[in-house]
Image 1: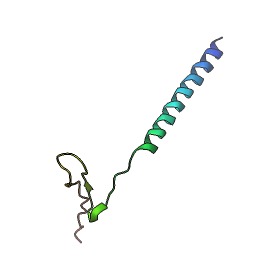
Image 2: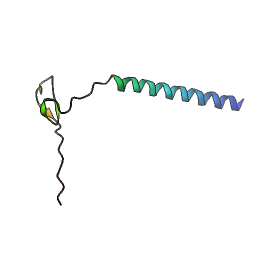
Image 3: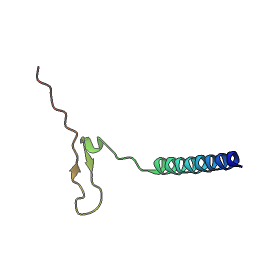
Image 4: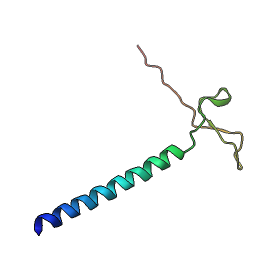
Length: 66
Protein backbone atom coordinates (compact mmCIF):
# COMPACT_ATOMS: atom_id res chain seq x y z
CA UNK A 1 0.00 0.00 0.00
CA UNK A 2 2.84 2.37 0.71
CA UNK A 3 4.11 2.08 -2.83
CA UNK A 4 0.77 2.90 -4.47
CA UNK A 5 0.26 5.96 -2.25
CA UNK A 6 3.69 7.23 -3.20
CA UNK A 7 3.01 6.76 -6.91
CA UNK A 8 -0.40 8.39 -6.63
CA UNK A 9 1.10 11.41 -4.86
CA UNK A 10 3.87 11.66 -7.47
CA UNK A 11 1.41 11.46 -10.37
CA UNK A 12 -0.87 14.08 -8.83
CA UNK A 13 1.99 16.48 -8.21
CA UNK A 14 3.31 15.93 -11.75
CA UNK A 15 -0.15 16.55 -13.24
CA UNK A 16 -0.68 19.75 -11.23
CA UNK A 17 2.81 20.99 -12.18
CA UNK A 18 2.12 20.36 -15.88
CA UNK A 19 -1.22 22.13 -15.60
CA UNK A 20 0.47 25.19 -14.08
CA UNK A 21 3.07 25.20 -16.87
CA UNK A 22 0.32 24.95 -19.49
CA UNK A 23 -1.58 27.92 -17.98
CA UNK A 24 1.62 29.96 -17.79
CA UNK A 25 2.39 29.24 -21.45
CA UNK A 26 -1.12 30.35 -22.46
CA UNK A 27 -0.67 33.61 -20.54
CA UNK A 28 2.73 34.25 -22.07
CA UNK A 29 1.42 33.65 -25.60
CA UNK A 30 -1.48 36.08 -25.09
CA UNK A 31 0.71 38.86 -23.71
CA UNK A 32 1.09 41.89 -26.01
CA UNK A 33 4.65 42.72 -26.86
CA UNK A 34 6.01 46.19 -26.32
CA UNK A 35 6.86 48.12 -29.47
CA UNK A 36 10.53 48.90 -29.02
CA UNK A 37 12.17 51.22 -31.53
CA UNK A 38 8.73 52.42 -32.59
CA UNK A 39 8.52 56.03 -33.75
CA UNK A 40 12.31 56.17 -34.10
CA UNK A 41 13.03 55.89 -30.38
CA UNK A 42 14.94 53.35 -28.33
CA UNK A 43 12.32 53.34 -25.59
CA UNK A 44 8.62 52.68 -25.06
CA UNK A 45 6.13 55.42 -25.94
CA UNK A 46 3.11 55.64 -23.61
CA UNK A 47 -0.09 55.56 -25.66
CA UNK A 48 -2.78 56.27 -23.04
CA UNK A 49 -3.15 58.12 -19.77
CA UNK A 50 -1.68 61.32 -18.38
CA UNK A 51 1.79 60.53 -19.76
CA UNK A 52 0.59 59.79 -23.28
CA UNK A 53 3.22 60.63 -25.87
CA UNK A 54 6.16 60.41 -23.47
CA UNK A 55 9.01 58.00 -24.13
CA UNK A 56 10.09 55.81 -21.22
CA UNK A 57 13.21 53.72 -20.58
CA UNK A 58 15.62 54.73 -23.27
CA UNK A 59 18.18 52.03 -23.98
CA UNK A 60 21.56 53.56 -23.27
CA UNK A 61 24.84 51.87 -24.10
CA UNK A 62 27.94 53.24 -22.42
CA UNK A 63 30.99 53.27 -24.66
CA UNK A 64 33.97 51.47 -23.28
CA UNK A 65 37.13 53.49 -22.98
CA UNK A 66 40.16 51.97 -24.61
